[in-house]
Image (cartoon, rainbow, N blue to C red; front, side, top):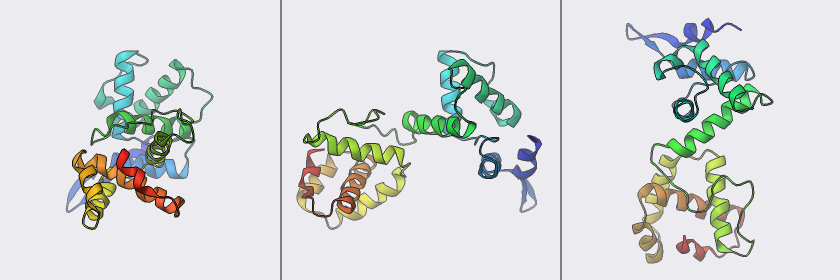
Length: 200
């Protein structure tokens, strides 16, 4: 495997200046050989640094991760230390990214009901199960908080007073999550009475 390929792809001249699109280069290579190349991402970087601080598994600094050979070595070290060698590079890549997005998302968005469980801890008839499912779909579907924040703003332009009162209780980002749950549920269950959304 040619790690130099990352550097070759990453270096691009823009308006007479050389730029380095490191993350893009790793994504490009991963797209073609997902079991050989892991994607560099700031979420993954934060997870690796945080985990290494709590339970050291490799000797590296943040800047070292911009060297792709070192980056891959750190990921392998993480895999070996935590007994994850049965998982492929692609699976580790996805896990680290999802974990990073969960803990280090840019909006500091927190979830009230979903806590990475595989199934809902609430009974089927418990309204919390609906919110759990919506939050789970939001996280595992890698939804964009920024996009749903904007959709929430649009919804408020035509929403009734109960929804406007609900929005006042939360940040625009949190209301974006509620907006996602509402419209996702409306698509999946078009005959559902969605008035329960105000109980979030």
